[in-house]
Every structure is written in structure tokens, then in C-alpha cells.
Image (cartoon, rainbow, N blue to C red):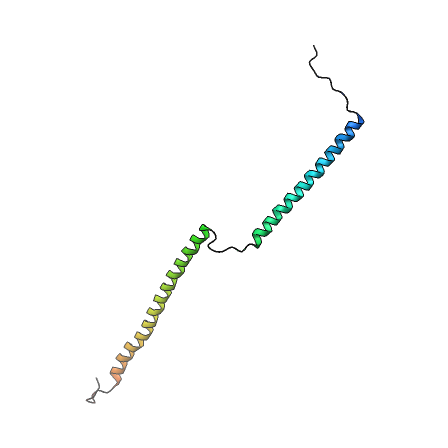
Length: 113
């Protein structure tokens, strides 16, 4: 009525063989882990060394196009501001000088205004 299996003792040879199998398995796993680590490191270094173009990815392409549009808009804004500044700068002295010169300059008749 005893349903428990009987446990036999392991012999010294079996223990030695099992230890050798475990050591070989450990060595294999360490070697596999080192190899995988080297592969990952090589892949990482390849990615670091790669030269990426701005349009290599659709996200970067969209960002670059948006940046170009913003830069063009700013260039136009600066050009417009520069032109209006030049016109203001050139126009102000002319109007000012016309008014003051008109007061100082003798008229053709020789009578001051």
C-alpha cells in the first residue's frame, strides 16, 4: 500500500559524472553569454558609427521640412523689418531736412518765410 517511489542512492561515479555535466553546461552558457554580449556591443558600436541623413526617417524628414518653413518665415520677417527700417531711416531725415532747410533757405525773391 505504499505508493511512494523508492529513492535509490547516487553512486560516486554518477555524482562525478553529474558534476562534470554541470561544469560543461556552465562553461557553455558563459561562452554563449560572452558571445551574445560581444554581438550586442558590436551592433551598438555600428549604430553609433553610422552616419544618418536628415531625411533617413519620416519623422526627421517632417521635422526638417517644418524647420525649413519656420526659417524661411523668419527670413521674410527679418527682411521686411530691415526694409521698413531702411525706409524709415532714409525717409525721416529727408522730411526733417526739407522742413528745416525750407525755413533757412532764402526764397528766389530774397524774402524769408
